Amino acid sequence: MDAELFPRSRTEVAPGAVHVPDWLDAAGQRELLEACREWARPPAGLRTVRTPGGGTMTARQVCLGWHWYPYAYARTVVDGDGAPVKPFPAWLGELARGAVADALGPGALAAAAYDIALINFYGADARMGMHRDGDERSDAPVVSLSLGDTCVFRFGNTETRTRPWTDVELRSGDLFVFGGPSRLAHHGVPRVHEGTAPPELGLVGRLNVTLRVSGR
Image (cartoon, rainbow, N blue to C red; front, side):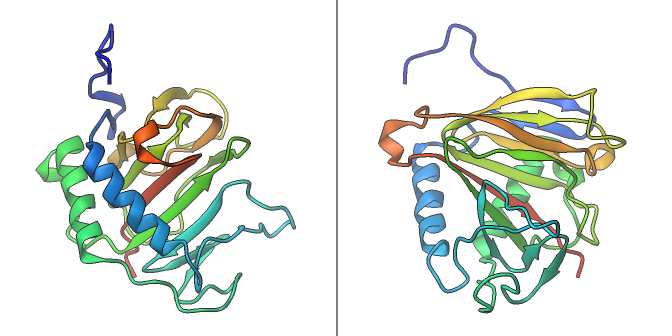
């Protein structure tokens, strides 16, 4: 990859919310992508999420450890094929803990182990509205890893879905961690830039791997 005119650097977007560019190298991205492809296969594979109001999310999702559906957790895919949720691998938990330590420092590590992964696939037209990750019983930091196409990640405030917010460009391999006073901040993805994935990755679209502690 060509050197950038203005290299990207670690940025604290809000207290407890940190963007670390290029946290996963090319090999790490390929390994995580291959794992995502396996997890996306049925049973308990990639699904369209339906909201209580009858709408559908444009990003499709697969879960590990605990199955999330609006707005609760279960051990089976209650809003899909009914199969048991796929297990959360120990190596993914270690990846999450390493991410928190690098972004926020070792003192921010949660006592509880990471045990949830929500993997969202975004096509070119997919979006994610402003929301909070508030269905967990733990205030451990949320870890977000990006693969594939670049997106605009909108990171807001804890009180409202409206401004103030900060738009952050997340590229393939980027890490975003939010905890502490920003743990319940609203956030979303208003735009995905089609065709911006690294060609060598072999991914059309964007994958977001979000890691959480259930507290359950």
